[in-house]
Length: 364
DNA sequence: TACGCGTGGAT
DNA sequence: TATCCAAGCGT
Image (cartoon, rainbow, N blue to C red; front, side, top):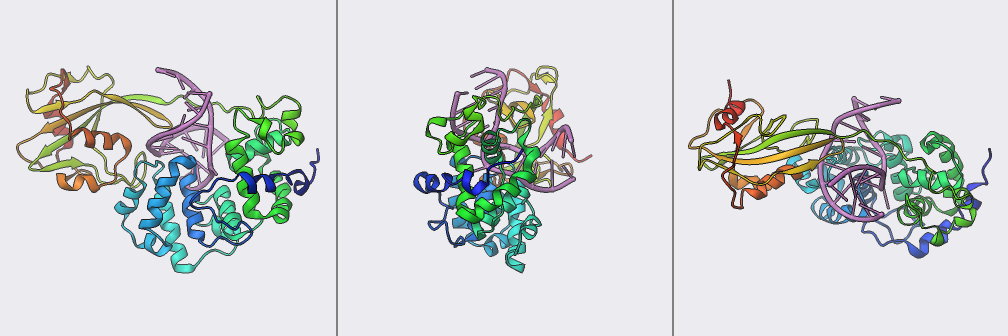
């Protein structure tokens, strides 16, 4: 099966994009020149991985003010970097970005696609996106949008990701003909605004040439992927406070919420199983909530336990002055308990035995 | 290869 | 409410 050459088939995409493109803070005004700030492209692409434009925009603006160059970012502290990323999710992207900035600061920008792919956090998509958008290399970038657009346009049966090599080979002449930065962004913009999972073909510049549209197949191309059900768990999340300090896990190197400070937590198969009536007055509680991650659902039950004196914490835990708590990077779950500490709570109907919480956090 | 990794918006 | 899934990557 041969495809119509991409410069011809995709020709309407260029004028369409020049007409409708959104004005985004990382986007260059002149799409025919190399980008004036490749670092801005790098930052935006890392932030945009699995994250929507509207979510990224305020983070990007703050980030560029705080870390305006690769040098600034490379020299920043880990906590400051994670604090600037706080709430954006997938936090290792922040560490990858800092590491990549260090390489760029020390060695300059890579001069080819393999060089970009060698930077931490840049896979096939992101390296090609930076290459085309920042440097005008004819390197086709295939994200979820591009795969969906191409699957429909070219009437691809099955998982379009299997066609990545063919797609890239086919796309390259179109990038060369109509401008790498323009075509890369146009393909994604079409997928993000028109060729959505439920597409709006009436306003699509390619509808007259789209295999799926012409055959009424946009509903089943590309096929929907099945996802595993998230695992459910229930936990107590607790703030132990004593002598003006609170007990926290310092950032871990890997795993869920790596790079962030975390409240200690106690797993509970059923909230009521380990529940005992606590000592009145010492414990506060608030209504729980369900914390959703990609692969997990946590039923979170927040507690605050005030103690008279600090104890020697177990390895992996640290007493932190409460005044410093606001400056530490926390995930959404732990931010929520941090915020609750400033609000009135209730004496809980049931909670783990305070002695059990202290034992779980004490050095042996 | 399949899985782990966050959060929020859209339907 | 439940589900999908968004400018993916590393292991």
